[in-house]
Each structure stands twice: as C-alpha cells, then as structure tokens.
Image (tube, rainbow, N blue to C red):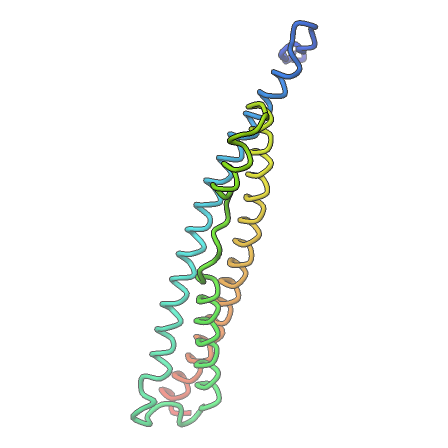
Length: 178
C-alpha cells in the first residue's frame, strides 16, 4: 500500500499573467535575501565577538608571559619557549586586530539608488528586479569579507593555543625545577 502525495496543480492556465508570476517570484527572492542579510549580520556579530575574546585572551597570555620578566624570575631554564609564547600571543593579538579592523560599509548606496530610480521611466517591477540583484551582490561581498575575517580569527586562535602551550612548557619546567 503506497501513500499518494497530493501536489498543487500546475498553474499553466492561460488566465495566469506571466508578468505577475515573475513579480511574485521576485518578491519571494527579495524576502529571502532580506533573511540572508539578517543571518549575515548575526554571523558578523558572532565573528566580532570571537575576535574580541581572542584579543582579550592574547592580552592575558602576553601579561602572563611578561609578568615576571621585569623581576628576572621567568624564563631562566627555557627562555626560547617563553619567547615563542610571547611572539605567538602577539601574533594572536594581531590576528584579532585584523579581524576587528574597520571596513568600508558594504551595502547598497542610498544616493546611487535614488539617483538611478527616482526620476526614471522604470516600472516598479523593473526597480524591484534591480534591487534584488543589488542585494545579492551586496550579500556576496559581505559574506566574502566575513569569511576573510573568520579566517583571521581561526589563525589567531591557533597562534593563541600554540602560545599557551609554549607558556605552559615554560611554567612546567620552572615549577618542576628543570
């Protein structure tokens, strides 16, 4: 016994206006691009938060690596590992700075949009098609920029992990009297 799935009837009757069908499709694309834009904004916030955490963590590692340096009590046995830890913490901090750097605003330029469509003979459907295309282009650029920032954050976390490991080796050797 098989289940039959009912599907919506095809709308190919001559009464259907192809221009209206296309306009409805454009509206759906427009709404979906708006949702994708909101998702990209949330992802941007997430990457920025992670980069901020990376910067603070790298700062803590730098402080831990240099905290006793002034008194001469640190890095007596394994100075190379201490220097490596400090260098990697600085690399992690630099990666966070690059990920958090200010960037040019990615978006549809308001003045250009108004100049292009305010006093023209384009129909509303034509303007909406261009808006959908512009939104897709902006979203691609935003996602590309975000992917680059995320790579910097991942690289920073890798440097931070390696630096923390190196510093743990230094502290371990110092504590165990190596």
